[in-house]
Amino acid sequence: MFALIDCNNFYASCERVFRPDLNGKPIVVLSNNDGCVIARSNEAKNLGIPMGAPAFEYEKLFNHHKVHVFSANFALYGDMSNRVMTILSDYSPQMEIYSIDESFLKLKGFDLFNLQSYGEEMRKKVTKWTGIPISVGIAPTKSLSKLANRIVKKYPEQTKGCYIIDSYEKRIKALKWLKIENVWGIGRQHTKRLQAQNVFTAYDFTQLSDDWVKNNLTIVGLRLKHDLQGIPTLDLTEAQMKKNIATTRSFETNYTKFEELAERVSTFASSCAEKLRKQKSCCNSLMVFIHTNGHRKDLPQYSRNIVVKLPFATNSTIELSGFALKALKKIFKDGYAYKKAGVIVQDFTPENRIQQTLFDNRNERHIPLMQTIDKLNLQFGQQKIRLASQDTKRVWKMKQQKLSPHYTTNLNDIITINV
DNA sequence: TCTGGGGTCCTAGGACCC
DNA sequence: TCTGGGGTCCTAGGACCC
Image 1: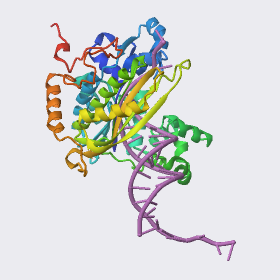
Image 2: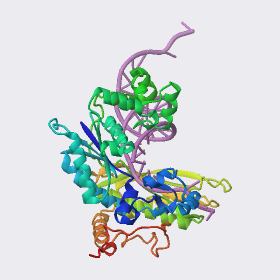
Image 3: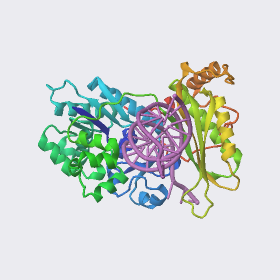
Image 4: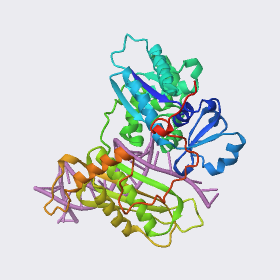
């Protein structure tokens, strides 16, 4: 059996852990730049605030219903996630952390366990130790455990936070209950195609022929079909090295000058370099993109990206920033108001297996230099050591008007309790 | 005025090899 | 008039996830 454990309204719940006065009250968490809604408490969902709602369009509604609005505090969410995952890892030797708020556990050899009480126990412990509410779905396959989890979300009281699909009847009933658009792995395009075939539930989907599914939804769809039929097809996937690393941001205001954009791109490249060094990889290729604000129909639009093959694999901040700036020069055009830019590094080689080239311009001295920079930044705080091409005066700021304290990662923000 | 960020996998088609 | 057969690798684009 597989268990899927999912934190309920994760970001909103993280904020509420440290603000118990907000229990029962509507909360939303906004994306970077306080742009749009990326998490909602149940109360906020009930007010009809959709996922992805632009914050400025909903400001009136927020005020009217006294919705508590938070800027994204990823330092807090990441740390809370680690705590939850650490607790869950005690419940099975085989775990796949699927996202910041979700984990699969493989329950192999648990035949003699009462899985219902096992799931309820997980839930109690996570809530007690972290304050985060979770839902547990258990079933013979991954996609069915996803489905079981969805049932818990819909019927929290009846299920006591844990639902198990362990019989043919339960599986069929659940499949008939699940709308096709809510099936894990069926997105908007597949939904359209399937509905055109009169497929409206997960059950209908499992009744299609293998051939049709494979021809129309590729091998991925076919695997999903089998998995939903109760044939374990999707296994836990090992934590792997990342294959792409991106740092991209929208800006609070539009940039028109090359220098402004260059500073951002240099910073994004530096951030990618740091992330690369963290997983001990070097990249062989890098992409820079810039674009104007697509929502502004009144302004001239421009969007371009460029992929640069590097002459050698590197994870040096200095080198990557240099390549990124050269790339930016090639695609930058005067006369546009830029809203977003990003750097994506790809095509990785392990740090210790770099292929030397005949005419290698690679600067070996960067290796100890980067190690030193990483060490200093770890000790004295992020970004203490930066390139001169980066924002040395701290001019750039993200819009984060409702940022909560870093309760668990900054000693100055730790909560005090009056006994 | 204001609309997020970061990933994965698969396929078709083109370029190349013998 | 007739013009082979069997491969690999790479990439862009499209689908999906949170």
